[in-house]
Length: 406
Image 1 (cartoon, rainbow, N blue to C red):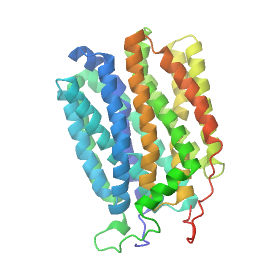
Image 2: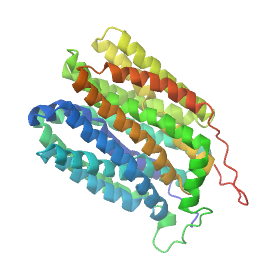
Image 3: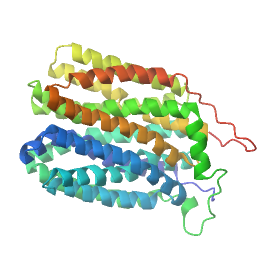
């Protein structure tokens, strides 16, 4: 494989732009819950189930997107993801039945996100950035996703109010196609036509067996399950929760935007700290802090200001788990199969996402309240803090092989 690398600024700028679009659009889906269900006469569980399918599809297809990106490079995966994203958003706007809505908003967009978000972009970062700067670079990329939320959620709210929820989705379908030209600047030299095939010390099967037998990999997956449960439940259901409590719609839009704004700083700081401190301790602190923040939010009087303070705190903690989690996977196992292994860890995240968003809709329809799921989020935060503490971050020792650089 060629030792040439893409320029660092090019990797960060284009990777950040891709994640800004893909994650920015995704973070605003909660704004469509009430417009869609009211217009179509569906229950909240119907909408929540489609988004739950989206999250599980994202995780499932992310495994294969990671394998393809590791084997053939990320360019083709990103282009295919952009096309699927546009089709899914258009289908979400035009689906007349819950089944078609679940297939488009759920399966198509989930598959699209698998090919346009962190697993694929982090594979590029891992291969193209020196180990000494890898955690920092991953923090920059995660911060871009947060900037996308800060930028895109108010835009999505404006489009819904100004053009209607269907036209807003069609406008986003056109915008997401910008990922395809951006992908051209992320073509990796080692995957170019005529390049020497990549030499790996492990097959895919060997890498998977090694990872799944390693206790620290299992613990990282358990913690990431909790991350998905918490952030997707809050991201999708908090706008409706606030409206149910009598707060005006703009409070929810500002709240989601604040989460994105403060997560820019949280993810960047987590990436920088990951170069200096034990990543397992960073992760445990983040999860425990989330549990405390949710508990205080529920027990304090609910006002617009309390919502904004909670959103700022949660924003600081929102995707700050992403850089240390992916960096520690690279540190333990190396980068040859990083997109694939990151895809499996993320699949666990998405199982949690499925449970969080679906249970939110299901239990609301059954009980008329989100309280049970809020308290589950608190308990799971404490659990995730505890399971990350025993993670061993040292590079794995392989018999008869020189460990890959971390």
